[in-house]
Amino acid sequence: MSFSGDVKNSIIDSAPLGKCCRRALLLGIITARGQNEGKRISLTVDGDAVLKIAKRLVLECYGKEAEVTRRPRCRSGYFLNFTSSAAASYIERFLESEEINISEICKCKLCKTHFLQGIFLSSGNVSDPQKTFLLELSPLSERVDTLCDFMDRLDMRFRKCERQSRRYLYMKDGAMIADFFALIGDNDTTFTFLNSKIEKQFMSETNRIINCEASNISKTVVAASKTVGLIEELVKRNKLSALPEELKAIAMVRVEHRELSLSQLARVTVPPLSKSGLNHKLKRIEEIATEILKDK
Image 1 (cartoon, one colour):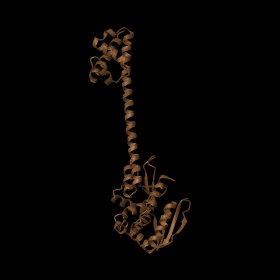
Image 2 (tube, helix red, strand yellow; image 1 turned 180 degrees about the horizontal axis):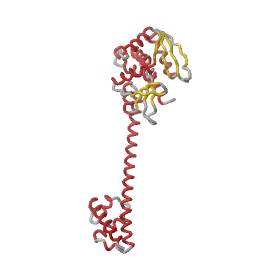
Image 3 (cartoon, helix red, strand yellow; image 1 turned 60 degrees about the vertical axis):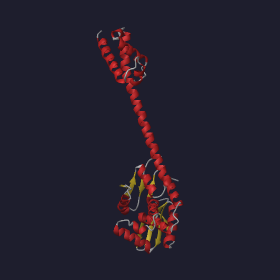
Image 4 (cartoon, helix red, strand yellow; image 1 turned 135 degrees about the vertical axis):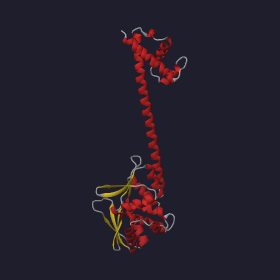
């Protein structure tokens, strides 16, 4: 079972008990994937669980036993066919206005939640947030613009795309996907996406800090190597005494503690120096050593 299938099963298991909410759930399915020829309605559904609840809702809401046929070249796709003047009238008004009239659908404060659940059950697909953040809605192609406008009014910012001659709505922001599932009343999936987003942000910040520290260490090693190399060359040529006494002491501390950063090295000098003060003295050592070593 896919992650998306598990989410849908969870929504179906908590299907509403109220008659008006169950009607809203069915109208969500019809809005996304319902077509009519006169009073003859055809619903396109994916998955056995969605098929089962859609068939039951048709019987409850319209008193019709729906006929089921398999979609060609689709292992878990079905057509659900039934006759209903009420459903046909709803589709015709919806197509004529090219707008979802939520006041016609909602009879109580929970109806909108279940209407949106119907849209997701019939046309939605969501990725496992441990892998990637992606929520897609694939209604009938001619419904994409209307559904996108409706989602915009709910502050759900879906984007449109086309793939294999089919149009889709999608979003890739983990926080917005969490907001969508909060809107449709699926708190478990909401928390799953929020937790995954927090974990990914934490890992990203940890990696950034590690990379920054590694870069700083690399810079410290390069800078220290240059200074230590010049000091060791002075020692090799018996030229260390050419340094002023104060700088000679700093030079020996640098050689003895070559693994330390400037901040750490400044604390072990006697007397302790500021980081900028120590850096200035090391630069001066490099300048003098370079001049000495030029003179053979």
